[in-house]
Image (cartoon, rainbow over all chains, first blue to last red; front, top):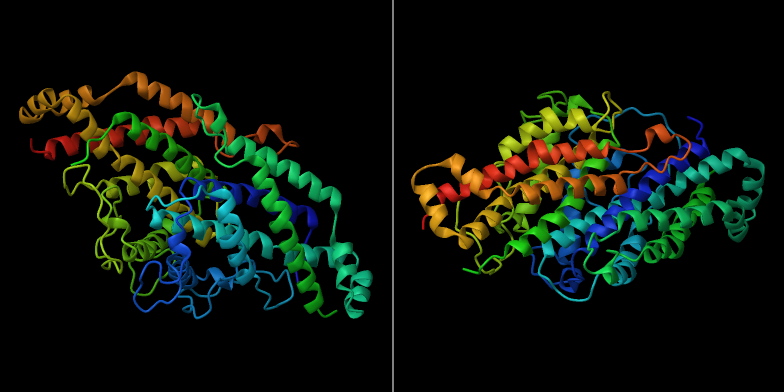
Length: 244
Length: 244
């Protein structure tokens, strides 16, 4: 197994911040369009869930065929996906095989909590565009949060004895505390708010009150309230499942 | 038919600048990965074209089913797409029905000219991610360039007599000149370079020489060399095809 370096992983996470912020800003262009999240809100033959889920599922089927989900840093939101049409890619193993998938939770939080705070209330009939943005947001969030597996592996390798002790004594609170680096988290929140300020500008010189597409504090709070805690939940789940 | 207002259309174009710039910056994260543009570079059963095209085609099939291409501001890159599973959306007609589609040209320019200037040479094996970014870039470029139809319609309505005279005398150079507003174009190029400077920052404090993901001048030159001229080509084609 290839040894992971925490510094390299942090660089990946920092680059993913742009992807997440861009995706959220794109979704914020459109209104909430609640109907796309309602089961049966838009009738789809042979599909019981909502329109946004339908587009996500169909997109995942396409991506499954080009082997997206054979990569250990990618996790589908739906089961029942077709087999890849490409031969497997040989890559060095970096984490221990596992079946941890937090997408169900990510999906629920996205619809119930994120959409209402990033989008204006209302319906602008841009259903396809909104659902396309949902796919981009969910994939970016899922990738980032599941990167916790890599972070956890790197931290484990740095201090295996302590992690094994916490793990075998089923001390999940202790694991969470040991995994937490508040200085890094605070730095991240400042950096994300700064990026959101830079990227989220509305270029609307005539209306300075409407200066940001999404308030930079909102983007930072999405990290603080959901992205960071969920990433750490993945880290704990990974370590709990990891055998020595 | 609903009357188009040029100021409203310009707002849409300005918002599309973010989408285009974000998409190009995302693609620039990955190397050129030439193999994804080579026919047979990656073997795909029952598909003769390249891997990037395959992902675009499969994505278009999904989007066709959710009626993306029934909207007069959306144009597919591939024919032979499935019928929508959703009932048609009744929208006020804003432009005259037409079959103008510049995507073949946009696609060629993207692969031959844009990819080499936005991506570093080389192969990082991120084929799926690169092709996913290609889809986002191509769709954003296509939408913007074909918006020329709306721009042309609004300009036509402002001065129908002159446009009709140029059109009936088959004076395409005259049409192009009449459609051109150099002040607006220059303003656009400055604005795009400014946005690219803001969004494209690398947040790499340790390496100031590598300050931008894509040089802002490159993004402005993509607008100057391809996006603006192609949009105007669409405008001319639309007016030529338009009957009084």
